[in-house]
Image (cartoon, rainbow, N blue to C red; front, side):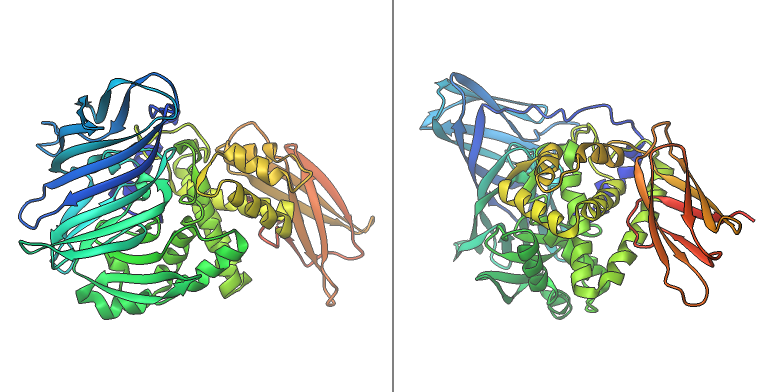
Amino acid sequence: MLFLKNLTSQLLWLFAFIPSVFADQYPFNYQIDIQHYAFELTLSDDIDELIGTAAIEILFKSNDVGQFRLDLANKTEERLGKGMEVSSIVSEGIQLKYRHQGDALVIKMDQPVGKGSLRTFIIEYRGIPQAGLEIKNNHNGDRTFFCESWPNNTRHWLPTIDHPYEKATVEFKIIAPAKYKVVSNGLLIEESVLEGGNKLTHWKQSVPVSCWLYVLGVAEFAVQQVGSFEGKPIQSWVYAKDRVAGFHDFARPTKNVLEFFSLYVGPFAYEKLANIQSSSIANGAMETASAILYAENLITGEATERLRNVVIHEIAHQWFGNSVTESTWDDAWLSEGFATYFTMLFQSHQYGHETYIKELKAAKKLIKGYHAKDSSFNVIDDRTAELGPVVTGMTYKKGAWFLHMLREKMGHEKFKMGIQSYYKKYFNGHASTADFIHEMGLFTSDNLTPFLHQWLKRPDMLEITVDWSYDETLDQINLILTQKASSEVLFDVAVEFEVHFANDMDPVLFQAEMSTREATFKVPALMKPQLILADPRTVLLADIQVVEQK
């Protein structure tokens, strides 16, 4: 997901001013493990109501389970008649009792189920989605159906465990007017013309993902097979009326990005990669697994740098956020911070180191702006999608900067080895920040926990003033470094300096470590410097001012 991507994202800063005092409050249920969802949905041009059947295969992990909960937004007066109504739940031929209230669908077993049991539950339901599945006209005036489920809007159109902690495989059978093409996760299994002017389209994904990564797009599409990567198709799906512009814009750089991340991180997890023009995304894109949704206004026919960078970001998510998913919303930076940083790494690889530095400097400027708006925001914190947004721009940019500093701290090769080990261990699974730090710690002798804490678990923005003077008598440069943070807790950092002299002398490089409010350093020099640069390699997330004392 690229910030800002939709209306919810556009309201992030409104909620960001509310202190994050609540942990992820989702009602986790580790007694069950959903193995597979199979959804059959009927869509119409006449009404916005969807008619759905969900077949959900569940593995029971505890004995004597008498009931369990799924998330499904119910029809209420507050929703003005929108929401889902359940008509039947059946398992093993037995009609089950259920309670559907407050977005919770509680299913009661006919008798307690034992550990290791595998059962399928058939849920019949229908309704008009309040969110999650947007049914509206695109910018050409044509009717479309697109999902927009992040972070927890899947419940508005599908019965699921609507939280990242649960992963399952999925398939969609969509019955819709024959003029539409349908795209979803995984591979196309069937397209069949039905009676009455409808068509059935069946997609199936065999790789487990969290349900907010399920995708559905129904529109009058034009489809292009762009190529393949390791035998997996690369596709472009654009509105038929935007065919020429869309095919041109999506022609690059997907394959190069897939190749880079596969070599740097690990194998691509999914059966295809489709880039899809969508009316459900207001701005940016959404990293739905194997089939990425992009805002329709990004298609211009000019193959803009903006679109290029969005494509890179969303493909990076296929590794981080999709394959390796944060266990709770507290650790959303493992998705957004990683996708932002690995976009920078690809840019460095493909377009040069100068582009990488440019992106870092731009990110630093944004971080400073975010901090000015909300000086209390911690990247890693207790937060919940049930109560408000789980990310802000700080999650993206400061999370990326942390990874940049970690890479410089560990060394580039050790960092790469750590990333590969982390990805391999949690491939198609879940991870926490603690998991990530532990894995990276295997490739360095440094204790990374304090480093993590000061950059991601504190809201401070580090400011450093460097006052310097030259002492001709002692032939030395005197430097006084003063740090200022927004709290009384000080940073433990190393500041690099590059000292330039006249007469084409080579610059002098040195590093000053400080953990106190003020630190003094003396550097031998046979002449007065012409210029002193702080952080010349753009390594430290800090606002540094260098001032000569006359």
